[in-house]
Image 1 (cartoon, rainbow, N blue to C red):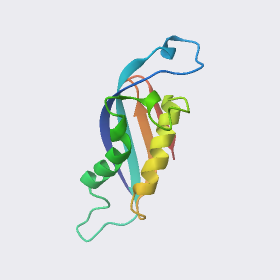
Image 2: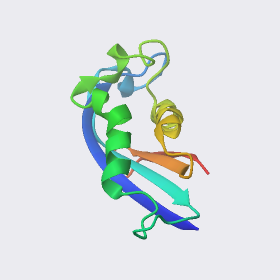
Image 3: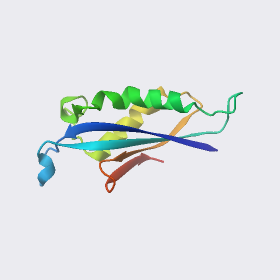
Length: 121
């Protein structure tokens, strides 16, 4: 089994609804999004999936949130933009864009160096 991962960084704001704490106020993070995939086969060149292709696929999902407010974009205009919900949303959306032979293992979201959430295997 081959395991590959890429990272993207985005700067985005959010505020949590129905939360008793300072995160109810609009605030931003320099988020790190780590995507981890697995594959069982390599192509004729010896690559499971090109890192550039994996980064491009991930950016199709993650990029629209860069320099934006999560709360103003679907689905987070309706669901709370917690790190947990963001990780699951990114996981679900990236999964459908991957080639069939590539399996998304997990998506990890870092709000800071100290706070992170992962969703998936």
